[in-house]
Image (cartoon, rainbow, N blue to C red; front, side, top):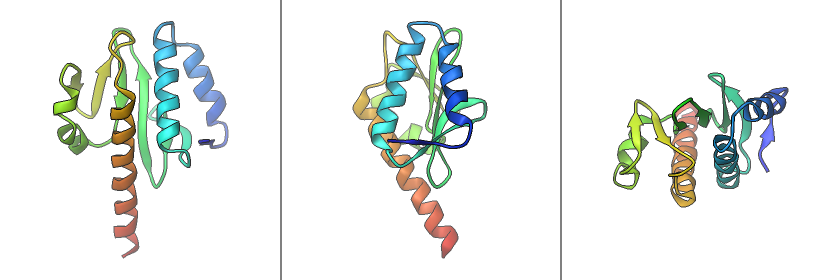
Length: 128
């Protein structure tokens, strides 16, 4: 299970509690999928959004008035997964979705795996 760092878990729970339904349920599901894909990652608040960190910021997610967002924290991954993201609006560094059109779990897991690999590679380069 993902670990929360310091006071971040209560902040994450408060953030999610303030999100109206059905957005809250969609974000809680996304959170659980990310957690399953990165069980050793820490849950953190980053850029005032819930997210995960392992060897640096991994991914984040957030609710907005008109949509939900998944932030892979890597513009290159948006290009890598472009074909699979057809039907979703993208902007700089984010994928927009809705409770009615959620991101497929398998796609989220593969994006998280790619981010884990990017972060691990960056960490290895720093050590070299």
